[in-house]
Image (cartoon, rainbow, N blue to C red; front, side):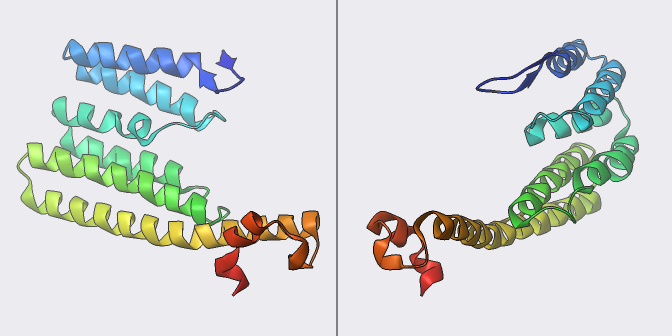
Length: 179
């Protein structure tokens, strides 16, 4: 069941996430992984937006289950490809958030590596997380300008080309692109 209104909520995904957490609290990490895989399959098919914690929650379960390498493989073959599949058709702001989410995956993998005392892996994943964070910040800047330009064109349709007839507060907002 999906609830809509002021917020969008998928009760089935929520139930699965809670069930995975229950399994983890019982130290049944293999069961938690399987339930999280089901939850993620529902998330991929949903039109609901989820936080990066939803996507990365599964990764520590692999490490705690003694499946460190399987966690990396899952991230490389399943998680990251699903996160980046809409990258090309996204605008800069959308691409920024994709980079942010992928960076969070690398942060979790770095944490798993640290717990496993795999220093080289930790450094690698930490570096990749930093790269993704840098890309996120750059793309957000570009996205702000793109979004502002798109909004400016909407204002042109609303107020016309004669800026002297625009409200001062609106003109001020577009000051950076009007120079």
